[in-house]
Each structure stands twice: as C-alpha cells, then as structure tokens.
Length: 94
Image (cartoon, rainbow, N blue to C red; front, side, top):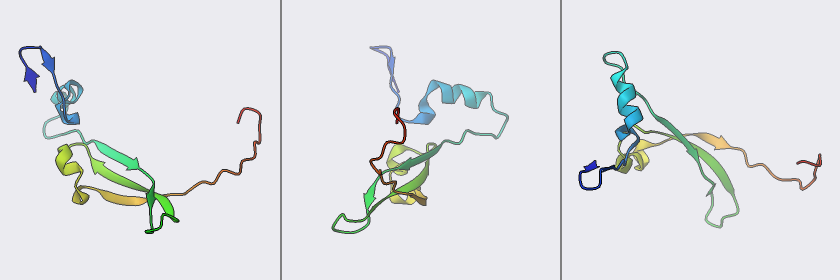
C-alpha cells in the first residue's frame, strides 16, 4: 500500500515487500517463492499447568496473516524436549 502524501510504503505481508517482488520477477516462468515459517512456544498440556512442552508448528508466509493464524493453516511437526538446568557450571564461561 502506498500513501502518496507521505511517500511512505507500508507493508503488512512478507509477499508485499520489495525483495519478494523483485526476486519473483527474476524466477523462471511458473516458479514462485515459498516462505516456510517454523515457530515454537511453550504450552501447558494439562489444566493445572503442571505439564508443559514446546510444540513446533509450520505455516506458510505466502498466505495472508488473517488466514495464516487460523488453526487450519498450521501443522504440528512435533515437540522440542524440555531441557532441565542442573545448576552446575562445567566451565567458568558457561
């Protein structure tokens, strides 16, 4: 979107940026960019908050944000292990 008064271009999606548009111009015919987004955040598995983990999800940056945030636009890839800190320093720098 371009605001002619302020000469400021505002972006809301990855596929609206200059880099994306210029890169797609240089791709062979019928080829497109694919933006893969991986993310993880801690979540609780029970109602009491005693069990938690780190699910890893995949979604695509090629679809609009309001669609990308829907449950149907994500896939659960797996879980990252929860690492426990022993509290013991094995070296001075760590």
